[in-house]
Image (cartoon, rainbow, N blue to C red; front, side, top):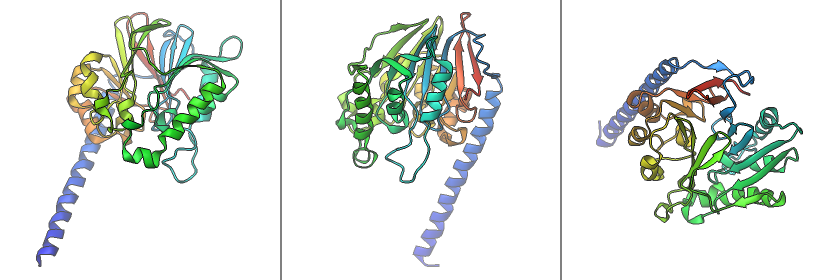
Length: 334
């Protein structure tokens, strides 16, 4: 056997071994995910508000983010889910704008038959986070008090984002809809804690450090701490170690009871150090369970021993913060 052929054989064996190892790790972590999930029983949501009306609704929008915060009659929407025109996709497909609008009208209508959102927040300018905002904002039955969106920062973008993902067009379409509806636009986000119904909210990464320029739009992500009584949640948008945000803000965030996993459980999220700093007891991922990266599942299930609840796997999840300092999860909301 000549040297080139031998090298190809060795390379094939090594690649096959690596692929088999990754596959085996993924199967193992899936089994563990299912095991740890059983430690926390989820009921089916019946919308009777029997557990209270201080809730975080994690909608099922596939592998995109859309989170409705509800507290004592107040509503706010963090991200909007993916729309129908993602610049990264070359073939026609259906997004989630209709499902999101339908859900808002189901749970957030006031006595006048209108949905009123105290505010909306675009965590960052990726289409899988703000792609449906244009249609939501344009709907005449949805009224919005104010809109939190950082100014677009072209310096943060990678070359691929600038050339192929068209982040600018996504951002511009949302901002144009905000201005057309005369909604108050807040580009300088507050970094202090503020009241929202019975919750207290705080935005994290309101000003993206210049040192993260070139790390990609995920580094612009705005996280949200939600607090009621002794219970805390962190909604991590697309916080990752690879973007630099986990290292910057892990200590600032501190202990939480519930973590909305950053970046849908993809590469670079939920590092072991970050999980040790936050110490979550529950992890919710806006994705399908099978799409979460094996190393992320490993860090959560094997290192942190945290159950993962995937919104697409369970057709959405509601986390209710009770007056007795509990978090109760319910599923199948859409």
